[in-house]
Image (spheres, rainbow, N blue to C red):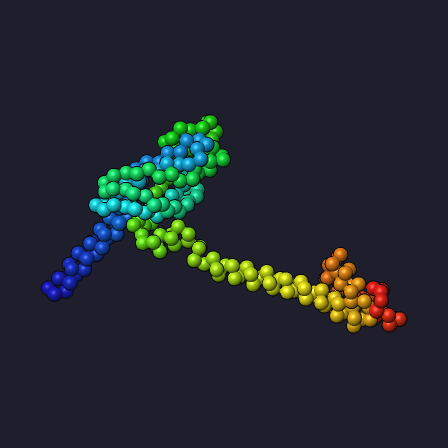
Length: 213
């Protein structure tokens, strides 16, 4: 009996957790979407299915062809004031506007221009400022890391390039040739080419450092 009671209690908690998760996913739903051919923006109507005001929403729109095959998706976030049980329209960038795409329930363009369907997925709502900023700018928190990586590669490449000119000058002096002339030639051509030439011609026979030959 004790095991049966624990089993029933676990089922109750599981059902409750599932209901909470399901209600959370349905807290904001899409009522309608409009995008005529060549519209620069689509108009998305969002409904608040909760008993509290909703002040920000994070969601994903999946774009599909008329057979339901996914074509693309995009994540959006917006600050919006939706009272309980009511609907508010928000604007989103039009999908494939330059190609004349239109939503299948909106005004179509020419016969040959494609139409599409969408699927709305709620990602979150009423997020605190930090979480909303992270959702709105998902890579912003890592910008400094990307900047450091780019800076590292730029400085490394610059150091190697300058090092090649230094190498040309050193090789020229070791071969009793004018370092200035050979570095100048490297600026006109490339340091790699000058290194190759210096390796081939060897030391100057007359011991002079005043020319490049």
